[in-house]
Amino acid sequence: MQQYFAKDKINNRFVLDDQDLFHIEKVMRMKDNDLVYVSYEDKIYECVIKFINKKVNVEIVRETVINNELDCDVTLIYGLPKGDKFDFVVQKATELGVRTIVPYKACRSISVISRDKEDKKVERWNKIAKEASEQAKRNKLVKVERICDEDSLLNYKSKLNIVAYEDVSNEGCNKLNKLLSNRFDSVTLVVGPEGGFEQREIDYLVNNGFEVVSLGKRILRSETAPLFLLSIISYMYECGEVNEKI
Ligand code: SAM
Image 1 (tube, rainbow, N blue to C red):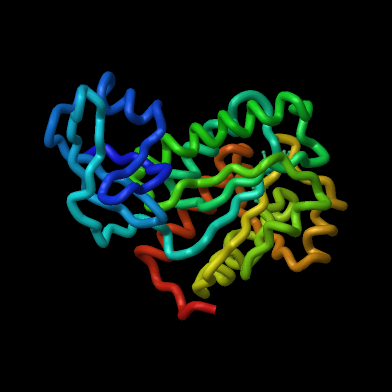
Image 2 (image 1 turned 90 degrees about the vertical axis):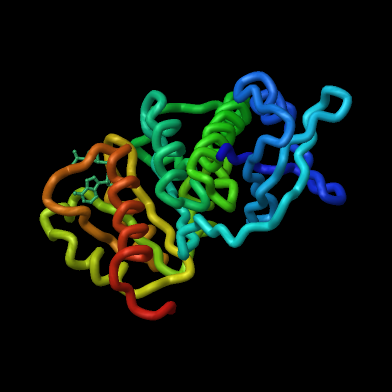
């Protein structure tokens, strides 16, 4: 069943944005009494489509107990990569349960996004995040923040803060496994761009409570590393053994 995110709720009806109403009527060609899921204020509702005066109305049938969220609030701070890799990571990280994505202008980020282009970029990334959140049937809409620099990185700290550093890649994943085997309410992950991190970026993060980890002996592409981390977290938190919440 298709899922949408509501903008508002009026009595027993949801208000969807025009693009979603167009999608229901013209793309999915839904008819009267077709069913959809709608997510509103982190809850998922089963709803029925009603055409009134040829207009799409979305009426609530029942609130469900569906919870497709990862039981950990994961923030990904990702060093701006070249080209459209950021689009790819927004989509895949959303499927893998990330909650917030922060584009980070790393020292070695080659792509330069001017302030006037930034609004358009962030709007596009949030559109990708919304579509991926709907496709993944998430309760929550993943948010892509504005581009941040080193000074504002610390605004996105969590209970556990991890930076993946390629220069310790030969240290294996034991430390990562140890850190992730205790359940945390929130985790922040930092991954570098294609060129990796400068040592002084790592020093800054370590001095502010971030744990440096290896992702194993192979060097992953910048766009692979966040997915590797999110896959491990969702596996350990939803299928594996983790200790009680900290
Ligand atoms: N320029 C670096 C080099 O060639 O060694 C590679 C950077 S890697 C392509 C991009 C980012 O992915 C790194 O900054 C790091 O955050 C993460 N990463 C990739 N492989 C890793 C590994 N084996 N251990 C830790 N971090 C890794």
